[in-house]
Each structure stands twice: as structure tokens, then as C-alpha cells.
Amino acid sequence: MISFAQARVLVVGDVMLDRYWFGDVNRISPEAPVPVVRVTRRDERLGGAANVARNVASLGARAALVGVVGDDEPGERIESLATAAGIECLLARDPAMPTTIKLRVIGRQQQLLRIDFEEPPAEAALARKFEDITAALASAQVLVLSDYGKGGLAQIDRIVDAARAAGVPIIADPKGDDYQRYRGVSLLTPNRAELRQVVGAWQDEADLARRAQALRESLGIAHLLLTRSEEGMTLFSAEGAFHVAAQAREVFDVSGAGDTVVAVLAAMLALGRPMTESVALANKAGGIVVGKLGTAAVSPAELFGDEP
Image (cartoon, rainbow, N blue to C red; front, side, top):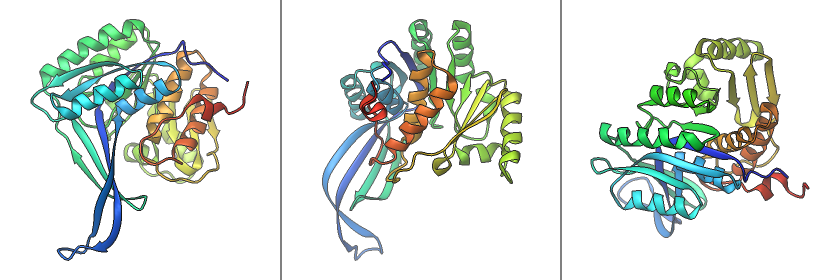
């Protein structure tokens, strides 16, 4: 079993709170053709960049989280949950924005609806966040940029420059179709839909490899890891393509699986483990977390089982 106790990971990005309302569905509303959910239980979990940090801490590694939240109850709740998970919190408060919330309504273990509350952070809050990043980089071994397109990484070019100057490898979990903003990171981790949005649809594996390698080279990125759900993962680098087949298990909920994959990669690379070994373990972790409901974390016991 690998010990992650010496790994130090800095997570920066869009911090959010995931809220779940669970209930029973026994009838259709007389007002509209929609199910009526009688809420019987509520749950709150760290989401977005905070879920990445939670997964890092769950492995036993040291996680620091930098982001912007509102000066409100959900922001306080994120800080409370993160602190309880053993995460070092460096959260800037922005009174002009509400904390980002994803509210999921679950009936009979099936997600019926998701409601998002979000606004981009102000420049002043982003400036305070950047100061925290530069200070935290001094003790970080790996930087994770968790981009959910909520505005928390508006200063990404400055963040990348600061990390490169500090000699800290950068893993970026991307969003949107402008990948120029990730130029110079060490590892990019798009899923199939995200990569297709940038390079277009591919015809076969050879076509995929050409497109992925061309993108990687154009951005000056050493490694591009394509996460492919039931098809596993493929790592593209100057050495070629390295593929890992998906772990055979039932898929229950894919939300947050990418966060788990990135967290395991970051913790492994912080220990100096080889990239291919890191990808294989991250793939295993992703296979475990999709068997859980909602955003979840993976423990070393789940990853390594009875390994010595």
C-alpha cells in the first residue's frame, strides 16, 4: 500500500457546495406533469475544487484549498466541511456574490432535478485569492487547477506563470473550448465530450491520437490524459499513447468522478511516482467512485484493499 502522508497538493479553482434533497415520489403534481417529491432527508458535500481537495485529504495527503466563496451561510458551510475533512482552507470571501451551490433532488435513488446558484467572483476577491496562491505554492508539490467555468480561474495565466516559476507541476481539469488558457500546464485531463468540443469528432483511435497529440504539442503540454468513461483512459505524451481499460463495475453516479481521478493523479505525482502508474491507480479510483451516489471520495483501503 502506498502512503500519501508526505504528499502536498494545492487545489485552486471553482469552489462549490453540493446539496442533496432525498425523498419519496408517489404521485404526479396536479399543477404540471412532474413528480412530487416529499423530502425526507438532506445532505451537504464539498463540490467542485473543494471535492478535489476532499479526495486528496481522503487519501491521507495534505491538501490546501484556495478559492472564492460568498460571505454567506453556504460559504461558512464549505469552510466547516473542508476543515472537518482535514483540508487547509484559504478561501476569499466575496460579499457581492453568492456561494456557488448545486442542489440535486433525488427520488428513489434517481436524480430528478438539479438547480444551480452561481455568480462570478469580483476582481477584489480574485486578487486576494492570487496572494494566497503565491504564498501556498512555496510548500506545494503539485498544483491542481479545477475549472468548472464559474470564474474562479479568471487569473489562470498568472497562476500558471507563478507555479512554473516556483517549479511546481500543474494538473488542469479543463472546461470550455478555449484551451489556450491552459498553455504551459504539465498535465491536462479532459473527458471525451470536453476534448471533442476542442478538436472535433474523431473517426477511430488513430485519428484520435493525431488530434490529441496535435493539441498537446500546440499547447506545450507534456501529458494529456483523456478520461473515457466505460472505455477507460488514454494518456498521450511524446512517448506515444498509454491506454488503461476501465475497471469492470456497475456505474451508479458519475458526478465528481473526474475530481477523484485528478486528486489521485496529483497525490501520486506529488510522491514522484511514474505517470503511467499514477494513471492506472487514478483509473481504479474512478471506477470505485462511480459506484457511489453523488460526489464522493475514495480511501486508501478501497484503493489498495489487502495489499501490503
